[in-house]
Length: 179
Image 1 (cartoon, rainbow, N blue to C red):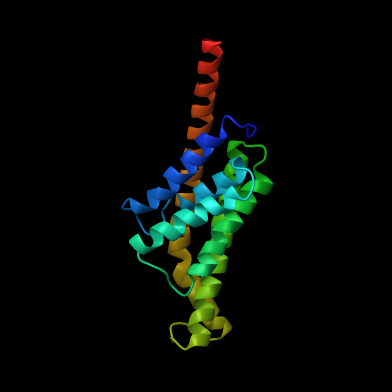
Image 2: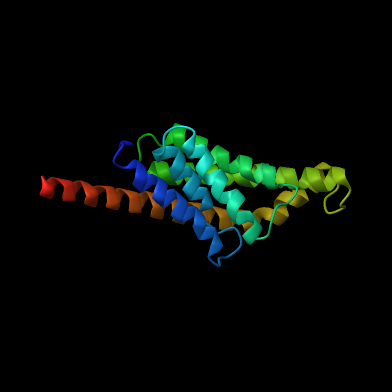
């Protein structure tokens, strides 16, 4: 499905709505934000694709726990999701969306846990030592969270892209009937 002028308001609306889904009670790391950023990259042109998720994150973070030392890394990871959506989902298919959502979850897991380990190891919090064993312990402890992130990214990416395809198709058929 090509990104058209007519579908831009729909894409923006779905991005904002899905990103605001992080305000709804949910299991840890099972949020629509990763899928929302992936969708924004795929379906919203220009800088707005990057700014929209950042705006929603900045606006909702104070309501869901605030900012942490690793918040800049988390924001960066979501920008990577937008970039992956822009690069890998020009042509959308269920397999491409699923594979890209997997990549999004993987990069989020690696980068955020690397940041957590670096913060712990070099700021002296003592949670993980500045050793390979400490890095391994950090990644091992985070595996259950990655499973949740992956489940959320796959589920919500499928839902957002599916809703977009359904609504765009419905809007197209209504224009045809009206003409």
